[in-house]
Length: 201
Image (tube, rainbow, N blue to C red; front, top):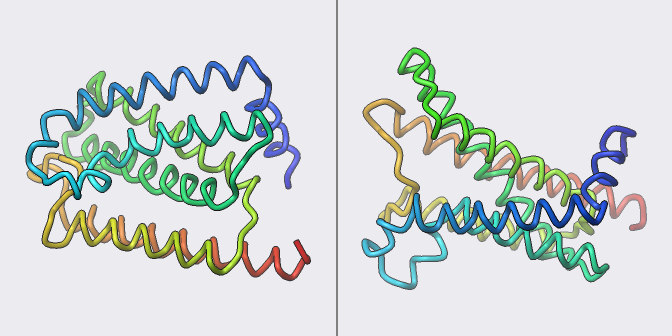
């Protein structure tokens, strides 16, 4: 673990910093559920709801993960699942806004900037959780299955993907980027599982 990464982990684990992150995460997840996804839930049957609010859902799940870690009751499989989602959907949102800014020639709205910064924070939260993972083959397979299923739900027949202006942001780019991130994260998890097994962890 690099010195910078170790210091980042130590900073997050300082009690008052953890409390601030937890409160911020709760606020952000509630805002996401209500503001961004609230008007869309009625479009989907209840059984599809776990696949609809990607970012606020994983922001909320990170709050739980960080709380459990802070009281030394972390759950490695849960942490692996949450880390995957935080990185995947954090990167997704930042990419969407970068493409939006490029195609609108710099329309840096307050909403776009705030959301890009907030979702960069999600990526950092996912990287934080990676340091706690005890990776193994079942964990890799379960995460690959869930997020592969999520991609199919989003871009397959049910179209549960988050709303974005397809007239400005190419749908195909976002779809294949999402699938590529799932594949890349699965490959990363497989590598971590191999490395930890080789190290006897």
